[in-house]
Image (cartoon, rainbow, N blue to C red; front, side):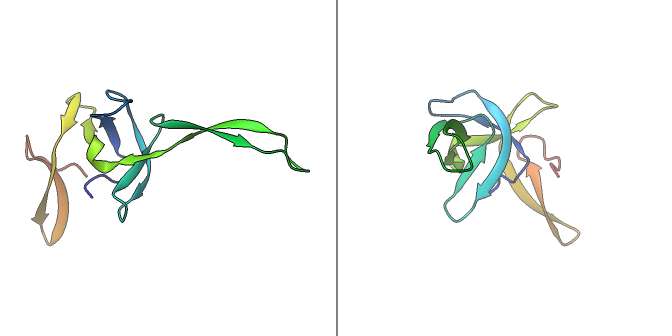
Length: 101
C-alpha cells in the first residue's frame, strides 16, 4: 500500500469524488483507508446510565484504490513509486521523480 497515515489524499471515484483530506488510519491487510471528512456515516448511540443518547458522525473506510496522493505544492494528484537510495526504500513521484518523504 503506497498511502500512509497523515498523507493528504484526494478521492478519485465514488460518492465523495473530488474531496480531499488527511488519512486517519490505514488497514493494509484489507487494502482500505479512513480519510477525514470522507464517507461520513451516521451511528446512533443508545442511552446508558452514564451517557445520553446521541447521533455520531463517523468516517467509514474506503478502498485504497479509490484515493490518490495529493501534492499541495503542485496542486494535483500524483502516482507514487518506490526507489531504493542508500539502502532505504523511498516513495517518489512518478511524474517528477522527486522524493515525497
